[in-house]
Image (cartoon, rainbow, N blue to C red; front, side, top):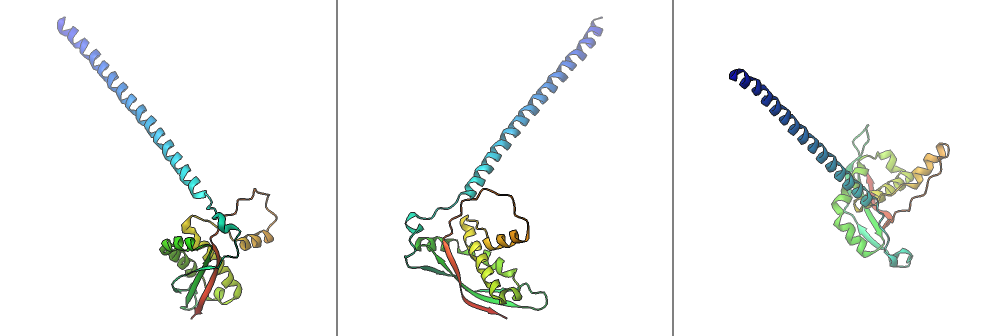
Length: 198
């Protein structure tokens, strides 16, 4: 009988070990799930903070907000030579751009972002056709797009008012929305110093 008793106790201890191992595994899975949830919440909170930081509007320096009598500050960009998006023929444009900015400090700040600004302007130019650029309206639209592209590296997102007005003229009036605070734009205007299309 002692042999039968020993074999009867063996399955009981084996079942106890199995239950103990299953409980430990379940506990580890629960801890991993809690850690995962906490980690995802932390990442979501960081992403929200980053989005909030991106949406902050750069404020104009107080001394330059209303002072229109200050002499203009110009920042010349090296001339751009780019292939145009014409499908019928190989066309290219050589365009010299000068930005008029609010302050000398802002000109220095823009200089530090020059590689990104040049990249953005090149991307805008590469999507243009010669037909678009030959007309005055096309050049004016290009100047607005270059203005938006030149301040984008600073975290400033400008909306094109004329494009929005054209869209709202074609459609029924959209529901009234709360007006966003207009973003500070350090670039007063975009000037073309040369404009050659071949």
